[in-house]
Length: 72
Image (cartoon, rainbow, N blue to C red; front, side, top):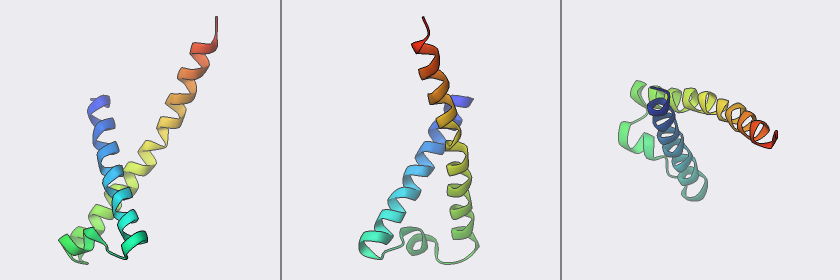
């Protein structure tokens, strides 16, 4: 279950990051283009935000792995 959730969160996070890249480089919001500016777009933005918060836990996972591998 965790691996599936990790992959889903990474996928949604990457899609969100690509959308921000499009906004930054070309002033084009793909989410708004596809879904409009209504409730569905807000749900997608919220899902990206929740995934970002979840992905912050990857720092803890990475830190604990690197500390354990350095111990003899």
